[in-house]
Structures are given as C-alpha cells and as structure tokens.
Length: 483
Image 1 (cartoon, rainbow, N blue to C red):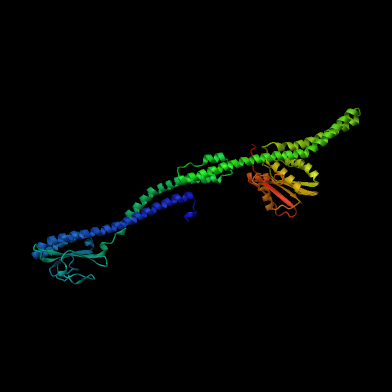
Image 2 (cartoon, rainbow, N blue to C red):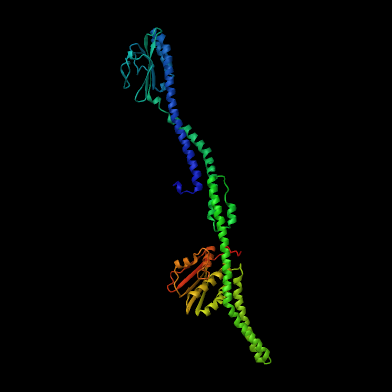
C-alpha cells in the first residue's frame, strides 16, 4: 500500500512510522527492563529483611521470648513486598524446623513442621541440609528463603523463613501503561513533525526534478534549466546533470528542426515559383502584344476598349498569382482564413494542369479558426503537391479543410498508389528530415507534433490514399521560429 503513494508522501510517512515504531520499541524494552529490575529489587529487599530478622531474632530465640518474636515478625514483615495483600509472610523456626512464630499464623501455624515437609507444592530441605542462606525458586514464580540463625559459637538455634508469592514479582503493566503512553505521545508529538519536515526537505529536489522532466518538450529549455534543483547530494546531482544534458540536446535538436522547417518553407517557395513562372509569362506576353496593338491601332475606339479589357484581365491574373505566392515567403502571426486555402489551391494549379489531374475541394468550418496561418499554409501546400504527384495521370485529388471548436484538420485523398501507415512512417523517419518524395511530408509530421496534433494515413479510405493532418484549434500554439 505504501508503494502506491507518491514519493513526496512515502518518505515523510515512512520516517513518521519509523519514529512511532522506535518509540513503541523503546517503551517495550524499557518495560521489560523495569520488570526485571523490579524483581531484582524485590529479592534484595527480601535478603535485607532476612538479615535483619536473623540478627534481631537471635537473642529473642535464645531467651525463648515468643511474644517479642511475634512483634519482631509483624514489624519486619510489614517491609516485605506484597505483605499488605497477604502475598508475603515471614516466620522464625526452631532448630528442628518447626514454626516458633510467624507473621501469618493462619498459614504458618505455630509448632507445625516445615523443614523437610512439602510447602505449597515444594518440599523444603531438612534442617541438617541448610548450612547457609538458601533461596528456593519455585516453578510458579514464587520464592522461599531459609537462613540459619547461629549463635556466637556457631550453634544453629533456629531458622529464618520468608515466603513471597509469584504475583509480587509480576510486572504491574497497568501502572506501566500510563507513563508508556505518555512517553510515546510526547515522542510522536515532537518527532513526527520533525520527521515529516525532514522528509519533505529530502523529497523537494526530487519533486522539482520530476516537474522539470514532465515539462520537457513543452516549455522553453532555458526556463527548464533555471528550474533544475541544485543539490549537494551526489546521486541527485548526477540525475540533475543528466537532465540538464538532455535539455541541452533537446535545445540543439529543436533549433535544427526549426532550421529544417524554414529551409523546407523556402524550398517549397522555390518549387512553386518555378512552377508558376509560365503562369505569369503567359499574361505578360499578352500584355506586350496588347500594347503593340494599341500603339498601332490605337485610333479606333473599339480597339482601345478591347485592348484595355485584355490588359485588365492579364494584370488581374498576375495579381492573383503573386498574391497567392507572397504569404508563403513570410512568417505570419495571424489566424488561418478560408482564403488561405484558396491561395494554396491557386499555387498548386500549375502542377494540377501539367499532370492532367482533376482537383476538387471542400470546406466545412463550424467554428472560428484560431491556428496560425503560416504553418497551415505550408502543410496544405506540401500535402496538396504530394497528392497531385501521387495521383497519376490522369488522376483525381480531393482536398478538404475542416474546423470545429476542438480541432482544425486538412486532408488530401487521391486514387493513386496506396500508402500504408508503415509506408508513411518510413517516408518521414529519415533522421535528417529529408523527404524521399520531395514534398515535405516530414515537415507536415514535425509541425503536427510541435502543435500537439497528428499526421496519419486514414485506414478507412478504401481506394488510393488519404492523408489527414490535424492540430488543436487554439491560440496557444508555439509558433516556429525562423533562424
């Protein structure tokens, strides 16, 4: 589940969980240590009580003063852990191991034999077997301590006997829970924000780098370089350097593509200029003939009228051809208009006439066109010339311009040799951008890619080939720059 979260959340959350787990682990270890320490402290208290009881009961036992022994046991047993709840008791035994006096007469009855007898499921050693202090750890966790009481000459006058039940040694987890929870809460309150802050600082360079990588190809390379994070971390530094190198290479590639687009534009202008030269020469020849006729037969009113009409038609034809050609030689910032399509058709007319091709057109505009005219004119001219060339002689070509609120598309269909999607890919895949057909299909693909559109073969077209170019119908396109 943690792996599905974003990296910017994984690290802070992981550090926070580590803090909580560490606090819980420390608390658990501290509780275990406290429980062991509590048992050690209890045993030490029992040992001191046994020493005190042995030392003070010696003269009383020698004097056979049972009442003072009872008082001593009552006072000494009060210091034993668990005595208040009846879980600890003490007794003084005579030399034969019988109870002389005890702090709990109902359990350790006076004159009852203990030494060598089973007590609470465990048999005590005989009096002769106890020569020094003996602690008996029973299976249930309780203990019994027996210590001989010796006179100054080493004679055993009796024994000190202390019992402590198992619950006394059990850790009081209820008492430990409250301080443990308080400790965990304080650790979480202090360390969780610190861990989250450290985690966010650790992931900040990674997030910045991811943001830069996401915008590769969409934002200006210079701006992306400025936004690359600079860190002293060696691993992140290597990644940042690699991304910066990639941006530099993309910048060089974009500049090369723009130069190629500009060169292709001017090459297309050169081809069209040569193709329409005779379109201008024909009316010019007529104009020269008309001026000669006017100079010779200018006296006739009818001759002057007919000659002037001829001059006007010839000049209009030249004006139409030049007006269609001029926009191809400059980069425009205005939106595409329907008249631009008509200009492109005019420019392609010499090739259409020369190759005996029938050209039909269609325009379907449902929304305002907001795409730049310069790039679209170049695409339409390249695709139209390609279609005319591939249609065969005689052949037919159909060009169609469509526009709606979402996209602008231009398609050219011809009945010539079928071009598959794989064939189009191989045609435009040359690294240098050279188009094997010579009509700028590579340029069409690059312009479509640059403007976030597409350039594909229509697989549903059955006879011949239909190429479709489209880009989003918006004003935020990045216009190609001519270097």
